[in-house]
Length: 167
View 1 (cartoon, rainbow, N blue to C red):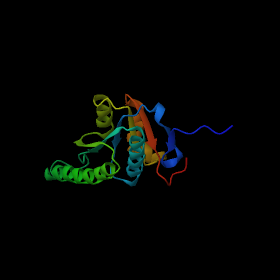
View 2: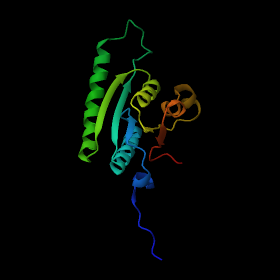
View 3: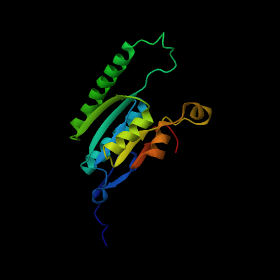
View 4: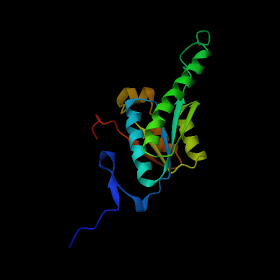
């Protein structure tokens, strides 16, 4: 007896995707422009391309809280916003080249709170987020945006490990 023909395809990382069961039409992909978020973004593009879904590419920048008010330069926020917009525009071209509908959002705030709020308000089916893979004291001190998103997001969350991090 011949093997049944697959109706899906294999995505990056060996994940098999079956078009018949796709519920991921609205994918939120928060990025910080690191190599870790680039890996997550590639996964989000693959999922959207395979399912016919769309991506909301989101960047959240924070004010440097460690700077005393007297040292803080208000033009810094404008430069941070402009840099975010520039990076988002470049990353957006990748998705457009693959025919994936994509929107971008560049916003100031606490990353995990803004991501969870956007996932809820945008009625996203999935959040695809990268992780830096911090452990031990670095994790305790710096926290994890991915962990907070997993805990509080109103939808499924796919956490994508860096290529060089063991499972």
